[in-house]
Amino acid sequence: QVQLVESGGGSVQAGGSLRLSCAASGYTATRGCMAWFRQAPGQDREGVGVITRITGGTLYADSVKGRFTISQDNAKNTVYLRMNSLKPEDTGMYYCAAALLFCPGLMQQARYNYWGQGTQVTVSS
Image 1 (cartoon, one colour):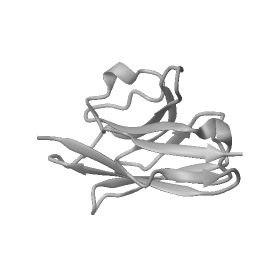
Image 2: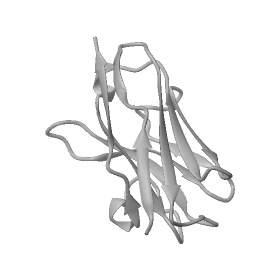
Image 3: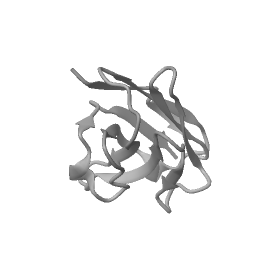
């Protein structure tokens, strides 16, 4: 049973930082990638960033470039999302997702095999 469990969300003021974690269990990825998505109330879910499991290469949405950093600890089977200089528009539910065979990137959400339950991030002005 594959599970992804996010943690680390919370409420911060604009300009603050948070680090989200996504712990994976039930599989050990040797390829594919993991990604972070977010969904604000009344809006579609959007891609935030992705990291490939083998090379550690990353890709970010333009809206978070230079502020957010994805990293991974393969020994812990955990992916992190470090969020700096947070803005009110970063508010939303943040989800991690895993693609086991190839990397769908930020746009092809339906191709991700597993999703976490989400963790809420609220940024106040």
